[in-house]
Image 1 (spheres, helix red, strand yellow):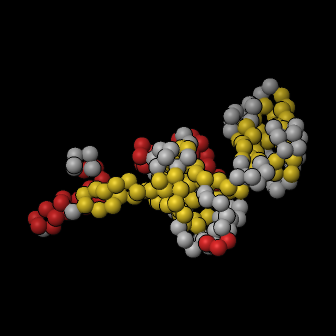
Image 2: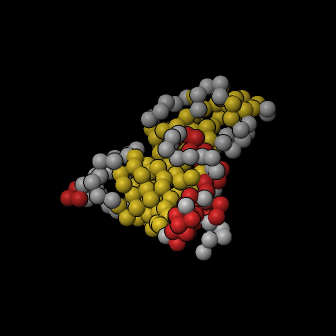
Image 3: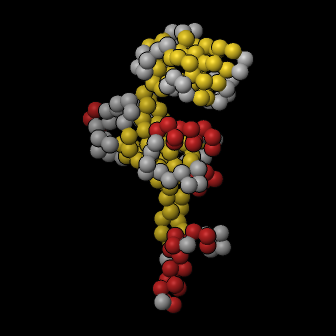
Amino acid sequence: MFTLCVLSAMVRMDRTADGAAQLRLGESVDVLAPAAGRVVSVDVGLGQDVTVGQVLARLETGSGPVEVTAPQPARVYFLLEPETQVAEGKPVAALRLPDTVVSLFVLFPGEFRAELAPGVPMELQLDGVPQPIETVIESVEGPEASLRYAQRRKFSEVSLEHGAVLVRAQVPPRDDTQGRVYQDGMIGSARVRLGTQRLLGAWFPELRRVLP
């Protein structure tokens, strides 16, 4: 037993952060509730194309009826149901802008927040794409936005015990010869290498702060 403890304190192993990835074609924008209230009705459907100023939903708030409108031309891909209560500043709808950009969203467990930052390399494996894709983190969302994304997408493979970290990245252009054919909503996994740690630290995470 003593020998095992000594070896575990000496042997080093790779330390990684693993997350759930989803590919989106085009930019997206949340349409937020201007005041807390109840969704009285929705005027559009999922997948519908909308124009600037078009009414998406109607709310009953403490100060009276409020219309929630589209800020720009786009397609609806998320919408609250009627009778749903919504807090001020929370999404009533989400719109997908024209398919001009391929964006990658990756959700990591919250304990890795301090180690994930723009410019950090990341390896992506998309379902249906044979070769891993190398990219870098472009931006890191705050705790609240990350949890909102996690609750909406319901990625069961990511533990939310310590919160969530949502990162965003770009992916290389489509390349049919290498099997890189993108579709909206493609899912996969991503990994960020965080260096090495002693085996003992992997067994007992609370020791990481005192082990060199």
